[in-house]
Length: 215
Image 1 (cartoon, rainbow, N blue to C red):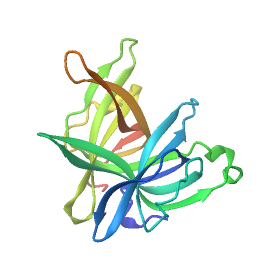
Image 2: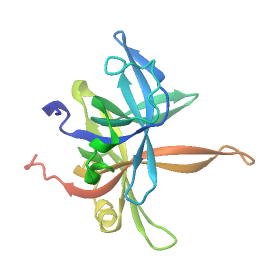
Image 3: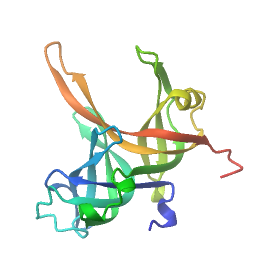
Image 4: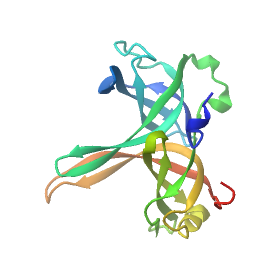
């Protein structure tokens, strides 16, 4: 399904379209649009995940809200300039997609949300414990793309994976398996003002360090 060029970054999800298409940008006359998809978790919570999709794959003038969709592609990032700061924007870049009916989804696939990344640690991992003693590590992974580009993917590991991740130095070569998740947080804008925002990241289920002679 996915060619070798993108073997180091592959995502597959099944979810429900929950927004209309919103224009994002154009490249060589091809328009790209953002649309949000709701993906179920095992815990009965949902993740709202943005898809970046070409107008050549789907009729972006239609409203598909409520339709089930199966998607494969890559988790990509780009920096958007906001005043004097850059903001890291993340979305799933869709390579292939199809609309599916509820009865076509095998029960074990109803919560499909899988990602594999092969990349490099580009900032020291941040290890911490929650007030309840749960171990967490934040890892920023750079995944190479053709033509000298890279995607910078925030990942979050738990428990023994968090302890393991905290020992990996900048430049370490990693392979990560997990799922894409959305997380709401509150950002303090000023003394009186706070703003609700959404972060997107990879929740890590398995992590391996690749020795360079294995690569």
